[in-house]
Image 1 (cartoon, rainbow, N blue to C red):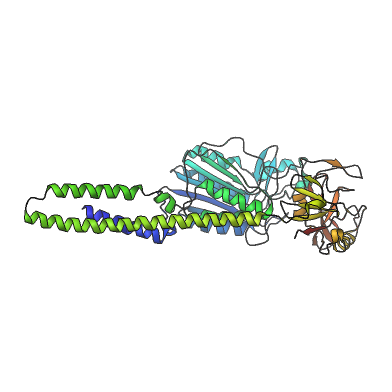
Image 2: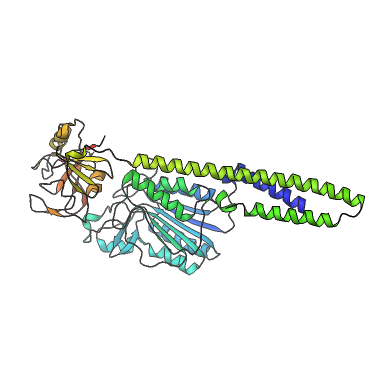
Length: 473
């Protein structure tokens, strides 16, 4: 019996070594509700339906029972959330994922369904889903462990009709014990919808959720590091978990060290001593010899497995160190000769050639705007023909780049008398800066007084300024 158990153990152990990611040891019940809304009449989004579809497929692969809703109405969202809460009462792990528009009103977060008719701020309470409803269902279910993922910090499409211009989502002040809540960006900030199939946040989640052996905290630390490096936005989490959770259990969770192997060796040695005491006759000696031979073979197999485990750990550590070195190398930002510096402000460096480098995004900005009101086409021409610092690759910034340049914590007065919020190393004579995006006869702009994005007529409005930017090299 002992030998048979050891053989079974060896087969399972070798399978884990060869295919660690294929053996997902999910013992708890897993339930997920996934909603993705894109087809808004105001402010339609490209990626949420893709994000929800791909997230649902990933969660099914990870052992979740998944309900997927695409472009859901208010009634569909309410009914799906109620059904989700009833399912959670059976116990296990609950996960809610939402991609789409989300707004905060008076500190309360609302998820916007498709077809919502919102003409004023007070309509949100009756036309959208209060995000606290999800937490209430989880608290009522009392199922022990719940995860909430909100890729919903995109810009408010109804901002102009709101009295409150607060951007992004608010942090939840209280949540049931055993809850993990994640936001695609930090409180009060706006996340990118993304240019590819998925938003940057969801793309990173899909990558790291399937990595074997990562705890939920490891997954979101990796996501935050990747998103901050690629977009500048900083994902945010709140947790009241009381234990570890693995989306994809792996080798690191199944066998964390060689204690199991050592225990088996000790059992084999005890068996060998027992057999020694039983050696009284030639017949027993033959039985003893045969058992000893089998024990030695099994011990050799265990030792081989142990050496293979040590080798895999060493390779994993080397790969982790290599990735860390690569990340550090990629994080280095090019700099100009230190003798040319004229000032520093956090991650901004000003140079005597009229340029300011943002070492966080590696974008180089002109140290001042064009100095007067200008049409969009004139601003575009000004930026492309700008030759500050001796560079010839200046261009007009995007709305996202201008929004990333905005810093509510910094203030100075522009020449036109308005407070503007950005580093004083870059001098603005006005508060409006033209952006490169267009749609029909309109062009994008960004207001450094309010921190808002706008669309205006290219050939009619002249209130904007031109601020050239280029990628640092």
